[in-house]
Amino acid sequence: MIEYLVDFIIGFAIGTIAGLFGVGGGFLIVPTLTFIGLPIHTAIGTSLACIAISSLASAYTHIKKRKVLFKVVVIKEAFSMPAALIGAHVTTFLHESLLRGMFSMLLFYLAYKMATTPSKPHHGESLKINYKNVPIVGVLSGFVSGLLGISGGILNVPLFHVLVDIPVRYSIGTSSVALFFTALAGTYGHLKAGNVNIETALLLAPGLVIGAYLGARSAHTLHPEKLKRWFALILILIGVKMLI
Image 1 (cartoon, rainbow, N blue to C red):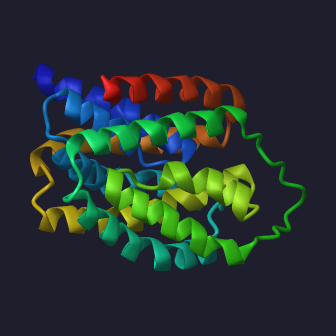
Image 2 (spheres, rainbow, N blue to C red):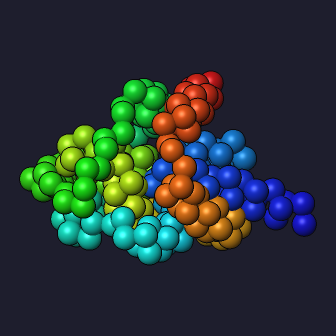
């Protein structure tokens, strides 16, 4: 019983952060799973399975708030899904220490971006979207998703914001919907490679779903700047842990 409660709390905490920032939480799930003893490749595949389940809850909330740009989702996923399959295939040829190093470097970079990138204000209801850069976001986030076992959402939000000129709250909502499809493609690739621990994914799923739903609701009421700086510190600590 205690084990199930711990799994729920872990899932809930990660899900809340994921829903709040429009990310999948793979950057937290992977080190958590390696900490409890799963091999890095299995942790990566299992994290994507968790994200595919939990992202539906946060996506539902953002859709209700009308903060999702579906045209961007379609264009982005047309490039992300095949890139995620390629990334998942490449993973099997890389050594565990190299994967850990790559994951840590990614976390350090994202910590810097989250702490220093200002939120772009949304003036009025007219959005001027730079659609020509959406495929770039798709390829980058999709490949990294399959390679490192993250949903790509942690890249989607800043890339949508910086390259595609989407306001932050729209970036979060659009990312939440897009990451479901990317995670699904990555999960399929890892299932074929035997890198998904289904039992672990199911144990974490309830907490992830509830946390993601509540986190997504909070994203529409809380100012993200102070939370982003604290979150950057969390990313740095996890990155250091992965290198030890």
